Length: 183
Length: 221
Image 1 (cartoon, rainbow over the protein chains, first blue to last red):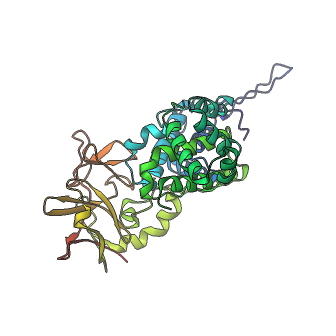
Image 2 (image 1 turned 90 degrees about the vertical axis):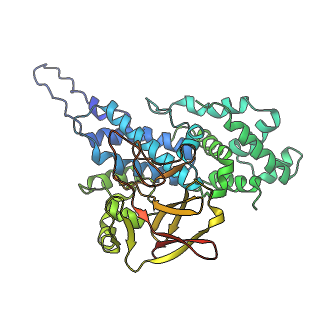
Image 3 (image 1 turned 180 degrees about the vertical axis):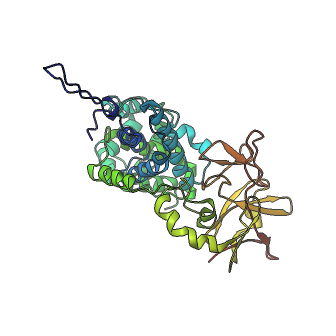
């Protein structure tokens, strides 16, 4: 399926003769959901930061939600149901692994946000927006570690510091980054 | 290695290598830093699309999904731990586990106690570990439970919702067990809080306190 075109928007082929019309084929709820799952996957990935967990959780959402979809439901309703399921699955993932209630995690995960379109360049700017809010040292350590992929040793050399001090600074920088409103 | 900066760096290093999040209970203190690290790494990589092979596998899995892909509650009662996201791998797991689970549980109707056949008492905590009025999630083999202490009394209920096979979580602020799958809550005694659509009570789990002050739950090997 073409990921760029929702299955519900298949168009009739232009016909120069103007007499033969190809009726649009009504999409199945499963096909609509598979298209919407691209956005769900990006939503989940943005909150777990790794592919294996993102794939597992997306599969959980699909297996949990899709068999329950009503045929004929509009894409917007299917998307809403998929995201409700994704929030539940993500909340369960984090709360189980950290031993916390979902209420305690809700803000950290920004679960209230429901994307309405495929991810765009805007998300790629998120890092810069977060870093801009931090002090110079915090910004530098996160830039080197997260954007350039430096090891702790390399960061320490670059910042004329020690590995131990950089570890502590990284932790404090992440705590500060968590306070920056990301959406 | 127990210092928070070491734990968080281990998690960051794993994420930078594309590995899974491997967390443990003590990491909760740094939840903000860990979730921020995950989000920073994701944002650095930009918008992510599903891998084509994963997408194809997903389509095939959905095409061949059984009509009733939900794990039954009865199976979940003994499957217990690890099914938190509810019917996660329900299609396969549900079919594989149900016969054994049915044989392994007696009296699992709403509110009744879970009595595993050939069950055994499993040490889950010290009485002193239990905070008065606060739920503690424990596992006794394949039986998951929340244990409560109220004064000198210790009780336990199943950690599986009485409606769907979803793992409940303890909402300490409200003093209730909440279901992540739908808006339902239960008191520590296992009673549904909804007056409009009350659900059956949670199954109780047999629990005892030894003379040594240890809490034991009747579970499985």
